[in-house]
Image (cartoon, rainbow, N blue to C red; front, top):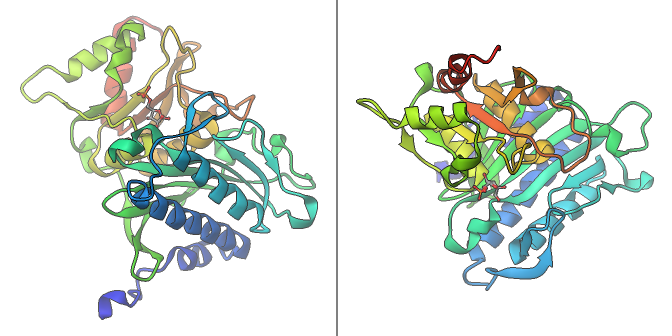
Length: 338
Ligand code: P6P
């Protein structure tokens, strides 16, 4: 039926990347990533039936217990990207060391990714996702971590795929806006469905953070979160523990997502290269603000951070201007020189 024909004005992901960049290697890369997302989506949907719940009995680079799906998703992505012929350096949340693609099969792209972010939610069927950020290796480089340990503004493009009632791949080029591609499972293609932009005026009043950590936050953060709860129309609290699901909702509905620094974790929990940077690019391209919060007396932009190690962390305060500026005001009120 006509619904299976790809609408003329809604290109596939490959068509969109080609139309906007004429970069065939980037088309190949995004096709490889899209294929991984389709495979991971299928595995996630089958987890219950195929007994893919539960632990794999190993731990990942950050000491998290690896789930069977974590291991499977990581193998899907590292194999596909290594064999794509367009990648030089791969950094995965699941691997302590980076993967340097052998010269004969190398290409120009360096990809940092979290193959299955939020996987602690798998066994209870809460949405999870894949996050990726793409750099072009430096001229003449044979492919080393120096090609990927760079400021976030060097990132060429970034995105995530959310595995939920719909499978949606959200993608942004630096300076090119944020575009959503919905998987049509009947033809196995990601079809351009919408441009994403923060709702005018900030959208729904939603705050998203793990308040279980609030005792360890600094006072202005505590005061800000308390302020969300008061007044005629207080903010709604929404937190799934799955960054992709929480950011997808924030981009579509509005609000603020926070994983701040705290006394126990001065750099917060989330990782720069495959959580902070990709989401910061998307939030900024949707017209929002992505900050690590107060750093050396001023508010630091996440994309200005330069990671020293591939698994470095950074605090995260990101969302629409209305809510992030409200958050900032609690530092000004605390007399902290901004
Ligand atoms: P907490 C999932 O483990 C994750 O990396 C992100 O997806 C999520 O936002 C965060 O950690 C949840 O952490 O400490 O609230 O369970």
